[in-house]
Length: 382
Length: 180
Image 1: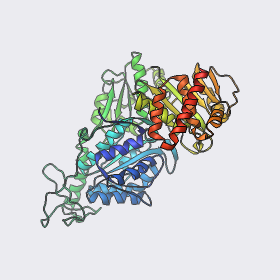
Image 2 (image 1 turned 180 degrees about the horizontal axis):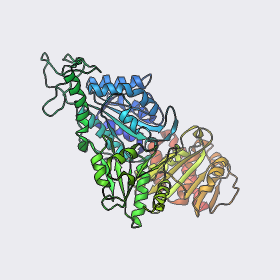
Image 3 (image 1 turned 180 degrees about the vertical axis):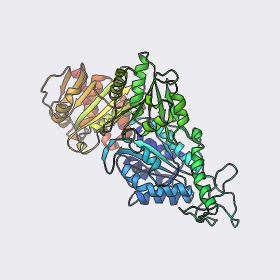
Image 4 (image 1 turned 30 degrees about the vertical axis):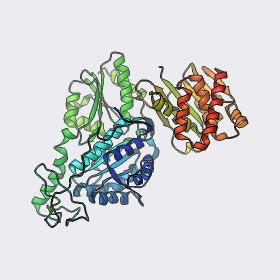
């Protein structure tokens, strides 16, 4: 890959990815371990004519990016668990009103203020179900800086394509560590721009009337069209409605536009999955330790494989089922009490093959931790 | 090349984390190697024993932390007491003679270098203590070329401080060279 080589933190890789994707507005409230994202954007955004605002809290931050997105900007906020909790109500509003935005959660240990400077992956299910009501969400993750960059660009592209919030679930280890990042030249990664309505001034614009391809063109708020935005169930004009057919149509649309696209939204990497006797499934920084184990075992001729998930939601059930079909046992490596492990058990045939290798003490899971789990399983004679 | 696993330890403010970052930059930006740097975050980073891990390799690095360093640098007694037991057998232990009194013997080549004293005597500015240490580490390990460290310093350090940094690096290279 051509481009500029940098030696940076994962948080900075996220900043570079966001700017590459066209970020123009950031509102946030600094919180460890995501602070460097706000810090770098406070320097970089003004240089390109963008806006950086440090808000009074995370509720306001989320509301500010929603407002800015409506005016036509690509927007992002960054936080960690406690801030992500505060953002849930407005996140639901963005889902309901179909406003493109990217929310970065650099995970630390929770619940509550938890353990600020230590790693965790405990917010996976919060990303899925943190806001109330039936809904769907896209959540992406990454284990190295090149992928953090790529997944940040993906997050913007997906949020613009499907008019949906996208959660980028990083973690303290990936956010804080430094490694090589090659920033691609402009044009190397495709960028999805905001789809704007072609309806002219003075002609009725229907903000929630889909085109033939299902996409909803937007009109910049405060521009030439009359436009209503509400968190209530709404019709194609954006006005509140309790008509059962409108309500049913909207909830189905909000869920189907994401769940029906699961195959298109699934991003993953794999090593040695085809012939794997023992398949490790991991994501985020945990996948680095899992990869370490898999590479070592394969060098010794043992049939180990790794499936690294980069799309966590919508969960790639089909992919996981097919990749796990021939494995004798499956180990999910994560730093929580089994949030992805539970979902993998639902996805695969013979879920008794699925085991959890985890760590929940704030320390980074090591290859030795994973090997310990492997020894236990092998001791059971599986 | 053999994979080099460094742990730089000392107290907050001595610049051990910056030193690890500069060495990582030298490896990645100017020698086309891979490097991963991590550090301890938290209250310990302000005054207590602090630590930064750096792995340099010509192949991909997955697990980003150092469990057993080949090269351990301790710039305070507290850091030495805490981290000297984790050194990889046969590794290289570098301590600053002014700050550290070597106690128990470990299975490693031990180098007590007058880094701090040299910086104070020859330059008079303790702020380049970490760069002098980096010079000694570079001379003793040969992990990167000194010129790459200098390039990394040029890109990172304020122009009016480049002179003292260059001087500190040279002093460190000399100290390391003599001790090799």
